[in-house]
Image (cartoon, rainbow, N blue to C red):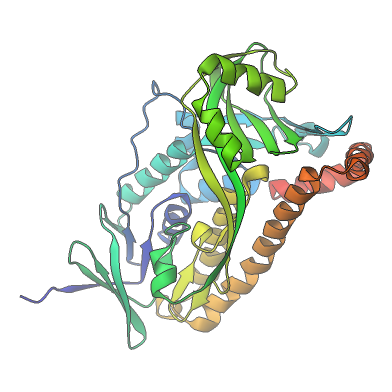
Length: 393
């Protein structure tokens, strides 16, 4: 018996933060959207432990999540605004401090658990009459049929659309099936993540110390907890995972110069490889890549999710004024690539540059770094410009 092909205006593969944001933004118009996701988002439990993966959500991303209809639900769950960011260097006295009040804002952004964002967006998807969820389902085949694409799922279902979106992560099957190449750089590092409580309050501040092995960040959460993101050489990260809790807490506090006193509690520790990647092209006729499917960056600035949300907003802004018949137009998709590729590439290269600069052991480089940080810290107009750019103001 032949399988009936279901037709949609767009098929989005991946309902993570970026894919779900795009679907929610497009659902404002009269269209048929298919969203394919391999696993259901976790239901948020306010009594649950903090998620180990968090994002520093910028003001621009906040606006996008508001427009997507998910922001209030996020705030109702668990989110922690931070007013200050304090960065300093291991190699001396260099430091820089950013404060929200310097740009007339109540906060710089919010530290939010990824599961909170995903579950809130999933609620929007489930409530929308424009969106049909195929979950749990996975893409197995992608082929062109005239001016459309045929998507075949592991359930046997067939979907047809003029536009297919790959928001399916760094190992994107859409990218591979569409023949879009990607360059990768292995940073030879791992990101160690955990949640801790400290002797002193975190002061609603995002703290980041640049160490020779990689940056260490303490990101503020509710109830006095902090999310730790520590970039380390891969072998050192693996060793850190084997330490007992007391020894790990001691070494963590020492690496952080005891800025917040002793580490009094620590959760499960996990480490994941850090790899930078960038697709040579984001689009082919009828197919576009977003988020980690198109680019991944070093986590030292916490910008990965913000870049992906910018992708979703840029593509939605291009598609929404058009007839859905034009959504697969290569000309229109190229507009999206031009709008986003340069910004993403600049950020990717900047993160690689920071990693090299702050990982350099030369005393001359260390002295230059420290001087540079202190000079920048004494230039309020320049700091304001940096903050506005980072916040999306």
